[in-house]
Image (cartoon, helix red, strand yellow):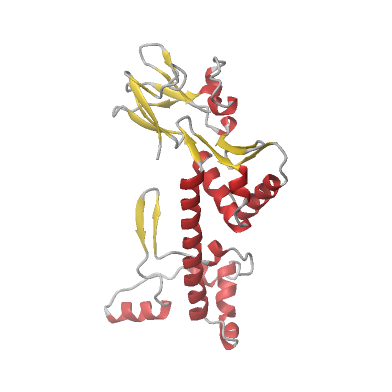
Length: 272
């Protein structure tokens, strides 16, 4: 509350979540420290106190020690926990609305970029616009959600109606007259080649699921050198596409040969 009015921040820590596809459960999140200590004493189980929990150099410790004063004003731990729960409900509802809007209005291309109509985007509330931008930049950029302030600045630029481009979160955002185009920023892709393991399958740049001969090397096209351009692909998007070098020699440009992402020797699919 001291730092931000963001609903997502006020939501705090979720009881259920995920991390890199692994489900996370926090069954003790709502339990009080003294109650846990009493239970451990009752079952004869020792515990270790973290010294940092008493170190006032940390903000959380200073806040915790100020709680008795806040409690007298009616702002106790229970009230703050209830606020966090309500913020979680609101945040989840907004992200659900964001996902529904993206499914309805964002046009995705197999080459790893998307477009949305400027008119449809402008019709949304500022709160939803910021979430839409965050979702799309995360999806088509480096996979991380930009900070609220960054999304706000990007939304303000789009609202000016000026054509041009901006970069954010490893993505390039291009505003044209009728559409906004979002794709990967080539210069932010790790140029080091990624080897296809013995399984013959690798997720490259978090965006493409590639089946290829083990030992093949995958790198971005911007590193591979100039190639003939496909007119239906924006130049920066083509530079961000994967190139596969085979162990026995030869280089495959999966999205350039006939414009097909699937060929007999390998498969290259956009990650869902």
